[in-house]
Length: 65
Image (tube, rainbow, N blue to C red; front, side):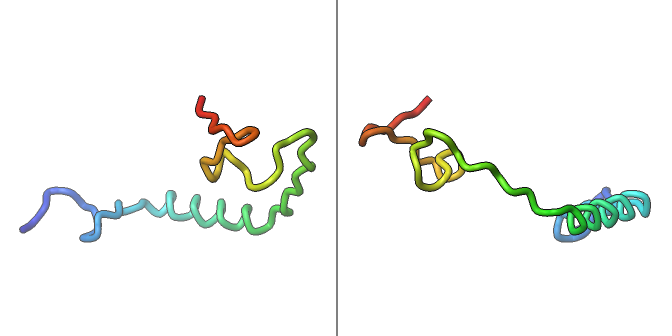
């Protein structure tokens, strides 16, 4: 079946040369940027970041907001 768009067969969009250059430039900037060191948390609950791991609990009670 032939589709009427210009996307790749796996669903990815075809990018213009300008878009491809922009993506390469952004990747180079990310690689060149120094790593960011986060300050230690003061008064936190300890353990892994709950926003990332979905584990909100305080004193054994699950907290969902």
